[in-house]
Amino acid sequence: MSLKARRKFGFIDGSIKKPTSKFDLDNWEAVHCTLVQWLRNTIDPSILDNVSYVADASVLWAELKEQFDVVDGTKIHGLKTQLHNCKQIKGMDVTTYYGKLKSLWDALIVHEPPFACKCGKCECDIGTAALKRLDNERLHQFFMGLDSSLYGGVRSQQFQLDPLPTLSRAYSVFVQQERLRSDPTTPDVSEVAAFAVPNSSVDWRVLRDQERGERRQLFCSFCETRGHEVSNCFFKTKRFPDWWGERPRTVAEYRRRRKEGPRGKDAGASSSSSGRDKEPAAHVNAVISGATAHSLLANDRLSGMCSWILDTRASNHVTGTLNYLEDRYTIPGRPVCLPNGQQVTSTIMGSVYINPSLTLRNVLFVPTLKCNLISIFQLTTNTDYYFEFSQNCCLIQDRSLRTTIGVGELWDGLYWICAGERPLAVHSITDQGTFDLWHKRLGHPSDKVVKTIPSLSNLICNKDSVCDVCHFAKQHRNTFYLNNKRATAIFELIHCDLWGSYRVASSCGARYFLTIVDDYSRATWVYLLLDKVEVTDMFMSFINMVTTQFSKTIKTVRSDNGT
Picture 1 (spheres, one colour):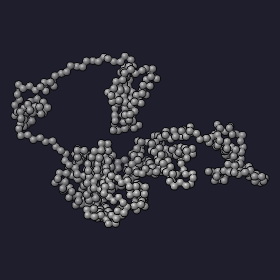
Picture 2: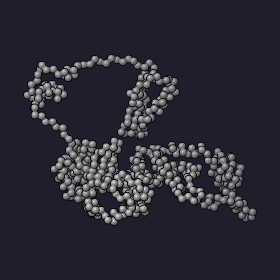
Picture 3: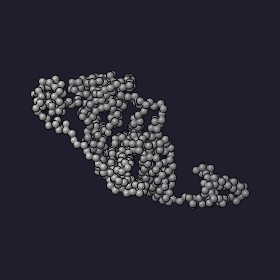
Picture 4: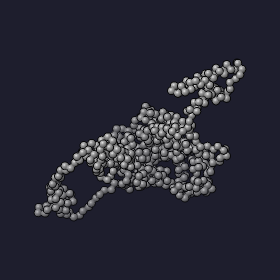
C-alpha cells in the first residue's frame, strides 16, 4: 500500500517500462535502485542468498512470489491450528488477544477467501450471507479463547442474546468490561440499590441498557413497529411462539386493535399504567411509602402472609419488617440508596422463608422501607433459577429440574409474590400414656431422663419390663478380623474411584476427579476431569503410562462401578 501511495508499484509489476531518453532514464534508474534496496532490506537474511544477484525489481518480485506465494493444505492447516490454540493467557489483555486473532484471520482469508457471486446476476445475496457466517465463526473463536475466570459471566450473557452480536460489538463489550475491572476508583463493596438506582460497577446493567438502545433503533417495515427487524417479524414468518396466546396473528388485525385501543379490563389496566408512565418516580414512591404499601402490609398481618415485589433493579433483597427475618445477625453498616435519593444504612441481615422451595438468603433490614423487595439479580446469581415473565404473571423455575419454585402475580404494574408461614409440626395428645410408651417415643432414654419432663414425672417405671431395643443396642459386636491379603508387587491390584460433580469448578474448569491408588505401594494418582465421559480416555492414558515408565502390566482393577 505504501508503494501504491507513492505511485511506485508500477516498478514492481512491470507496468512502468524503462524509458529511452537520457533524462528520464536517470530518474527511472534512481527510483528503481531505491526500490530494489527496499525489497532486499525486507527479505529475511536466510533466504537473501537465493535472490542476491537479481537487480531488476519486477524480476525480484516475480521470483519471490513464485517461491513463497504458494497456497497448499499444510499452510492452511497450520493457520487453523494456530487459531484453535490461540488463548488468552493469564496477564494478557483483551486487545492483545484480539490482535493475535485478527492477524491469523487476515492471513487465512488470503488463502481461503469467502464465497462471492462472480457472474453478477445473483439475486439471493450469497456474498452477504457468507460474510455473516464468517463473522459468526470468528465470534465463536473469539469467545472460546477468552479467560473463563475473568469473562465467563459476560460471555454467557452474550450467548443469550438473540441474534448474536457482531464481532466488533462483542469486542467492544469485553474491552469495556476490562476497563471496569482495571479501574482503581471502582469500590470493592457496591451500594445496595432499591428499585432504579444506577450502579456502574454492575456490568449486566450496562449491557442491558445497551441492548435496549439497540433494539429501539430497529424498525420493521412489515408491521410498522419498532423493536425488531423484518427477518424476525412474527407476522411475516408466521412462526408464533407458544406464549403468543390469542393475540392477533395478522397485520390487519394487529393494526385494527392498536387503533381501537384496549377494552374492558385491559383498558383500565392501560389507563392506569399510562398514568404511571407519565410519573414513574411518583408511582414508585407511592408503592414504597404510600397507601398502597400500607394497605398491603395491613392485609399481610391479618392473613399471616407477606407480599414481596420482584425487582429487576434492586441489587439485594431488602425488607422493612424485622419480624420477617429468621436467623438474623448484625453486620457492618451497608449503604442502601432509595429512589427518592435518600441514603440509609442497614446493620441487620437474615433469611426469609417464602415457600418450601424458596428461602431468601442475605436479606437486609431497612427500617424506613415500607415494602419488601426480592432482587432478581441476587436470586439468579446465588441460585440456578430463571424467570419467565408473561402478561399476567412471573414464573420462577429451576433451570436443571424445570420445577416451579414460585409464581408472582401482576398487580398495579408490579409483580408480587406472597410468602407463607413456615409449617410447624405440632402433635396434641389427651391421654398421658404409660412409661413404656414414652420411653419408646423419646428414643429409649433412662427413667431418670423421662422423669425430668414435668408432665411425665408422675409416671411409674416397671422394673420388671424388658426393652428389647435397649438390650440389643447395648450388646457389643466382635471386632473385624484383620485382612492381610495385599498385593505382592506394584500394579498387581489398583483401586479406582470417581468423585463429582462438584458445584464449584476448579481453576481449569474441572468438576470431577479420578483417584487411582496402587494397593502394594499406596502410590496415588489424581486426574482432574471436565466431564464424566473422560474417565475412559484418562484410564487408558494411565495404563499406557504404567507400561511405558514402569514396564508393568495392570492385572486387577477394583472399583465401585461408578467409574
